Image (cartoon, rainbow, N blue to C red; front, side, top):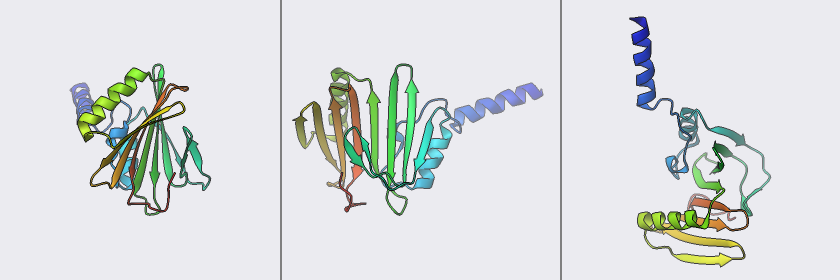
Length: 173
């Protein structure tokens, strides 16, 4: 009888989502959310490693200058693929910048993401090619939020950046 109760309680805990058996995704985070809510989301996912940064030195994430203080970096490894998620907070602990980098990625993956995001957010505002980078930009929520899809051909990586431009106007990468 006790074994049945224990098994049922484990099934209930796993089915309610208290502890997820899969890694966190960048889609689970929302711009404008608080740091405490983000830490709750991260702690529910048992296969995600994360590091919290509090220093003032700027970092470079695929050649883009990123505000490093008050940020959380999440590293997710799946078979042969690696994903890094960087969440950047302002001085009030509000999430204003999300970066996710996936490696290795192919140009076909970039095209799939472009089609998916075009269906989700409408047609892009700008498409550029700079050296080995293909950059597509969307403006969301009456130009308050920006979404960037960047494919870096030399490194075979895909970078997605979601930014709330109104939360921190003084910081520009």
